[in-house]
Image: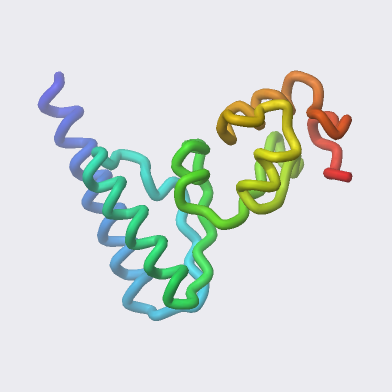
Length: 130
């Protein structure tokens, strides 16, 4: 039912927030966050993005793993796109977007373009960038 799936999503969100709070309390210099935007509504997503930006401004290294490449584009300084364990693109967001036929589009487009046979630099999926 809708109520039970809404409750399950709320539980996931609460566990996610608790885990994030525990990571912040440790005052680590490096944080690894897996799918930090999953199960978040737009307001919570915006708050999470701002928190991540603030951590980076405070000198912390924040490593994110996510399928939501548009969010990564908004919050990350550098990205690595991985497919089946192979790094298919790496660099600053601007570099990854700039070395692509996907100019004017996003990281999702770069990822899909690489899977479909390469990019403007002649790189094929799974090959290191030149």
